[in-house]
Image 1 (cartoon, rainbow, N blue to C red):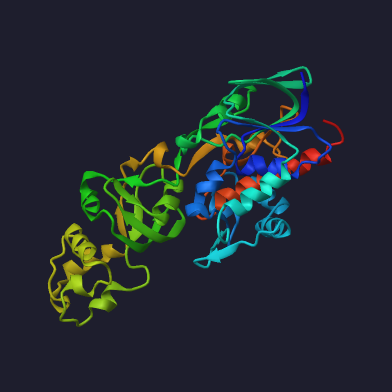
Image 2: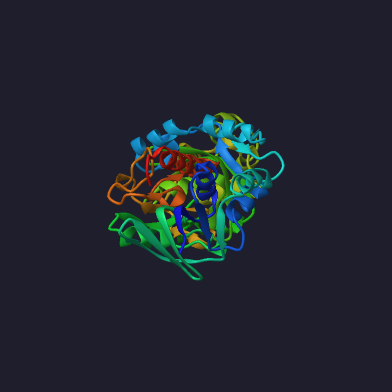
Amino acid sequence: MKIYDVLILGAGASGLMCASNLNRRFSIALVEGNAKIAKKLKISGGGKCNITNVHVSQDNYCGDKEFIFNVFESFSRDDLLNYLHINGVDAVVRKNRYYFCKNSSDEIIKIFKKATKHVDRYINNDILWVKKESDFFEIKTSKELLRAKAVVVATGAKSYKSLGASDIGLRIAKDFGIKTEEFIPALVGLTVQKEQFWMKELSGLSCYVNIKIQNKVLKEELLFTHKGISGPAVLSASLYWQKGNIGIDFLPESNIFELIKGSKKLLSSVIPLPKRLSKALLEAFDVEDIECRKISSDMKQKLQKIHDYEFAPAGNFGFSKAEVCRGGVLSQELNPYSMEALDVKNLYFIGEVVDVTGELGGYNFQWAFSSGYICAKSINDATKL
């Protein structure tokens, strides 16, 4: 039976980045449960792949800040953009902060396909277990029994079940005595309590908001849905929310009291939001829709809520609607300069399977590419596998 130098479990963003940058002196194989590689890359960002963000730092992530900082010191956003440029892809900036492929995610997928032509692929192979026998790993899939000197776990998390997502990466880690945190949905819409059911009636409407949670302020669009609230601001907020209140400023770029000052118009006409939303907010605040100049001091106090409406979400939309997951292999179990398990030589964990999760806006692909690259570099630099 052939013994590979490096076996990579998962052909997503992190696994492909790792495979693409391994030295060709190694015998390498990719194991993927789907019928094609890079399925999540293919559909992300509306098919144009939100690669990274203009501003990237450890503060955009849930996880060990020092660990994340060290990874990005080794392979930064600029390093990623330069890597893509060298390989013929110049990312474009949209909305002044998001980097996308210019035309299609196929541009970045082609880089990986070209760079891994020499890599063996085991497609449609679900990973069942990994064991270590002496100096070699044995990997059992639904079709094969494989052996390797080093194993890179790039199996992702439990979001996007339609793309073959599972918790196999955590099960592998646990089998080796490596500490993990169970996956929970992240970058996901939030359901609401009975007191906020009025939000469901606004399904389809959106507005620009600031959402305050913990010490974070997320600035982006909020979308009302039949389940609760979603949209970019909410998805990023969900990364930090587990229970308790969040605060929403529905008019972050205006001052409600400046808008209504001396006006003879109705409150709902002065508020620069869709009329249905303005009326719904006034009703939720128990403020009568009267002429602005006639409102009482008590009504003014209630109207302040348009800038700091606080409530506790009921929960989230679940794994089936989540873009990523929180949780994974604890970073304290890994070397931040190689992604190798501290207590299991030649076993590596990269990408979303690690307990590092970014906000919406290219941060999770940046993490996948950075962790995949430094893993490959570490293996290349090793004197012996």
